[in-house]
Amino acid sequence: MGKRITLFLLGLILVASCKDANPDTPKTDDKPVKIVRVITPQFNQDSAYQYIQNQVDFGPRVPNSKGHLACASWLNSKLQSFGAETIIQKGEVTAFNGDKLNIQNIIGQFSPEKTQRILLFAHWDTRPVADKDIKDADKPIDGANDGGSGVGVLLEIARQFSLKEPNYGVDIIFFDAEDYGTFRGRSSSMKDDWCLGSQYWGKNPPIPNYRPKYGILLDMVGEKNAQFPKEYFSTYFAKNLVDKVWNTGRRLGYSNYFISTELGYNQQITDDHRYVNILANIPSIDIISYDPNQNKFGDYHHTHADNMDIIDKNSLKAVGQTVIEVIYQEK
Ligand code: AHN
Ligand code: ZN
Image (cartoon, rainbow, N blue to C red):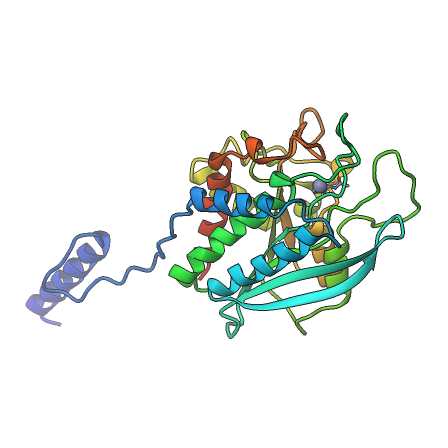
């Protein structure tokens, strides 16, 4: 090869590599640079807050009650208004005390034709009693945080899907009858007395061969200064996903919420994700507010203090923006 040609080729390589080294420089005379990164939408915490208020306005969402029925049809129509195809899985389950509960698992499928899918879920029912309260312990609670918050955040994420479609198909499931476990001071021999809706779903799959990549449960994500330790079953079944979500939250500046504490074997939290893991074999995690130092849920938990007063938009934003980032960055 002649010297001139070699030099010319070297020059070409140099020019090409310079371009690569500086991809952000606009080039008017060049083909547009293909930007691969997807821009994640901004999660709106005011909107999520309003969706929690809407649920609380129905009154307690206790199975077999009027508020429960009214809220179910509202949830269905909200999901449809955001472009989801919905499936209402109706069933009857028996609670620890023999009560027959008419339950509804509410499923919203976004881009149902896509084979690559993610599952997001929360429970939408509320506890029939305030059995950790000193007053009116036999009366049902508002469940603004326990029930309302996870659903509120997921409805806002669903609204974002209607504005910009993510690469993955997403299914949102609002499970019923999570919170009908044995009341304090009562005895029962029933095992698996919590999460009756997700257990019903796991044993009666409404979608055949349903295999999303993973599942994320939101439970009690709205209280002020919420802390989300890495919950035991989540790490046990889906360690990589826990790390991905927690790293994402911390990268976005929410390290006060997504704390690095790992809950141990004797701090297991039985929640809907346990049954989604065990019965449906979908690797799933729980983002749940829990005080790892005092080893308990917040003082509001299963009391009448679980009302709108404890909901903080900053917590909703931290969780909502983190989950929406994880979804939109899936390719
Ligand atoms: C128990 O308290 C057994 N499990 C926590 C799951 C839960 C209750 N989430 C909300 N309420
Ligand atoms: Zn509860």
